Image (cartoon, rainbow, N blue to C red; front, side, top):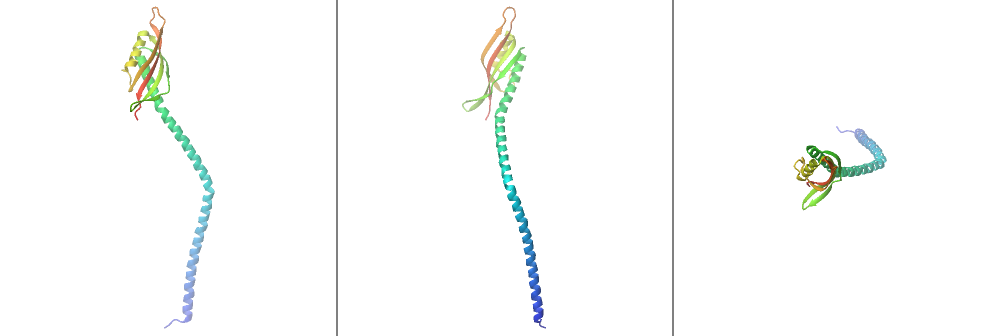
Length: 184
């Protein structure tokens, strides 16, 4: 049996309707996606200037923080060394039975000798006690025996004053340079 023209027409219309329904469904889905993408694009375009400005601000903050960190790194090890040197100087003065009355450090500088770089810190140290103890203190600084850290001292000047007479008590101002290996 051969299907009639009406059956073929109904089958054709049904296939056409199915294809049309599938195409309409795909178009609707794509239209919804397009609408969603357009909204996302609008949101992104709205946020872009704000995010760009925020990024520039954060980059500026990063540059400032990096600069501050670099400055802090450059100064921190030197100040720690000065504190550690001060601890040694107080301990040496105590061992020599002296009262360390003043300790004035200067900012450390770098001194290169050949391929080796040294950190050089200048100190003005004032002590009070017996003149013989003051001389022992100066000798201990020059010898570097009691140093806890790997550093050496160069005594650049010593000014001793004492009252004279029977008293051997006096005061001294000692200027010295402390050399420490920086290591690079």
